[in-house]
Image (cartoon, rainbow, N blue to C red; front, side, top):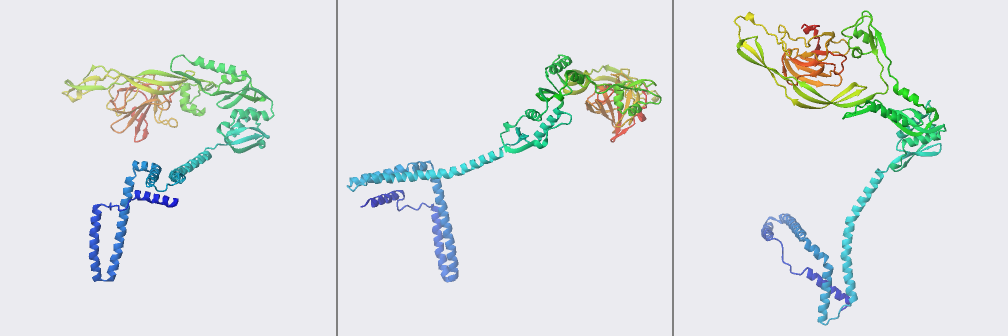
Length: 600
């Protein structure tokens, strides 16, 4: 027997070990029963086909072949399912140890052949066969791993290329007169450089645009040249007389250049320090932004310390006065001088109550160019109005009333951030509110006994100062304790109410009619502190520029009840009450309901 025959017999022996003949049918019993029944039925059908004819026989033969194909496919699926189920970790271990098993098979065969005194295979042949089998096994593993890793590596390479191409930064390399001065991210950045150069040069001078060459090229983002550095290089190449100093910029506008900016920083710090009171929660700043930048500046842009100090101390507007003439009115004076009536009243608080011929009115006043804005956190306690409860005493006649318990205002802590400009309040922003004490309602005992004569019915006067009786059941009463209407509705553009003036701050404001408070608010401009009351007939009244609001939203108020105090908050000049009557979105003239002068 040759070496080849021996190896072939070993391989045959191996295959027999792996797949021994006579393997029993592993199909399920139910499937075998169904197939047996099918075969019996098929035999009956074949007998019937002999009687029906060859055509029917051919049709049934086709059907039989289809059923056999279906049965074969079902068998294949069952076999695939069994193989998939058998692919457990044991089979993986079996495949991993397969070369060792092959070696054991070969070694066993050689051992038995030697015991039977058969010719032994050369060790070289056995070694080569074993190496071939091991190489084929691990080669299949490497091919499988390569098939898995190759697509993953291709995807990684594609993502790397895409990320590199999309993340690449491009910039513009800028040359002036053939000299490289830097790189910018876009043309807009270079236009900013040109603008700053033109500011420094002054007198409408600029660099020669035909000498600028920009080239697009990829570069790292960190390689972009700083704008200020490029400005210095351009000015240096422009050929002007230069000096190294600092530039003063106010609101990003170039003002001039100085040899040193130390004195300027000390001056600004001193101005801020003088404006601060030293209390906590305070921040000071200027009404303009300042910046000092070191660099090269033309000699022509140099300015002196005296010029800068004069700029900081100058006024934006000079004072202007107007002499009252016969026939002048506040609104006429405001229109003649091109200012708003509110501005005229702010500069001259008594103009609406006293306007005599020959009086000097302030039309405009000077405002410093450099102002220090100080923002302070202020705490104030606001009063919360108390409600009034009336109880009927049937033992007393109608018209009788007695204060059983005095009401007490509640307290509300209000924290606000207030901005002042040279101690003039510019803006007030409310930060938080905290209830300190709930209001205590007032209890009033009123009579409920019907008088013997109806003519005796009269209304007693409440002398407490918080509630007054209406005069004869009028729809609206005069809402302020005193004063008169000096600026009527539509007295100027956008004036939707009537201004009641001639009253000091803190004067009582009363509900013009009974109703429900639907709005209590504060705005830095416009109405300031104001209240809106909705009345049962659908009309509304508004009370604005109050120094204090004494009621809350949802409170029911009666006619004559104290709801606020006179002030000048919001867009107001001088203490007064802005009173409106509204109905269905329209503004009504309050003078038709309450007159023009306080009747009390």
